[in-house]
Image 1 (cartoon, protein in one colour):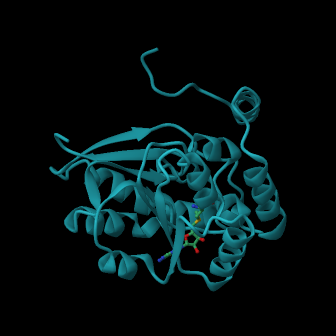
Image 2: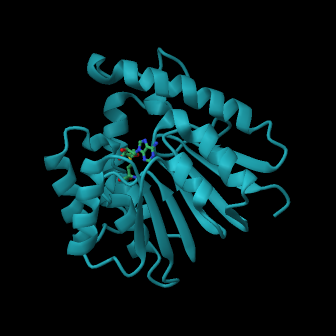
Length: 231
Ligand SMILES: C[S@@+](CC[C@H](N)C(=O)[O-])C[C@H]1O[C@@H](n2cnc3c(N)ncnc32)[C@H](O)[C@@H]1O
């Protein structure tokens, strides 16, 4: 196959999602419960990672940083995915509503031993962090990605063999072009269009940064994988 993405229609993409979910190791009961809870409780629940993405969050990390916690679903997934390494997980969140929701979930599921939530704007929090993380998941406001990655690299918050994963770099497809996602309804279209513009700037400038190697993966809503060059 010479291209990198199959030409799915909207209907086929749904079927592919279902096919993958039903042929993958299912997420745990805890994750499933929290995913359903978030979906029922928050009108913007589509900000949460998918079930399949939760199942994929299995990496051999020891120190993990997440930017953008939302209801805590992905932090719970990282927690479960790093049982072997007992990773320390730091997650950043700005919204008081989502801070309350995730704190409640972390307590309910007993993950406070390894998950630390830091409240406040991520750019300010990042500047106070020390040490290095071997996995950094960037998943907050899309117009902040460029600055977050810059701070991470400038402050060497990424360990020498570490990896940054930036989620949603396709902005539902609108990063690629305004005509690429006709299924995105008017209610959220403007939001994702502006995310797409910001992310296109981020993706385009990042590849010119001589410090890093980047692979933009056409999985989920687009995931950029960033590593130090020659690591
Ligand atoms: C896409 S959601 C995160 C989803 C979560 N990682 C998951 O997969 O379930 C993005 C979150 O980033 C938060 N956020 C937005 N701007 C932020 C900022 N400047 N600093 C910290 N968090 C921010 C939002 O409140 C929202 O909860």
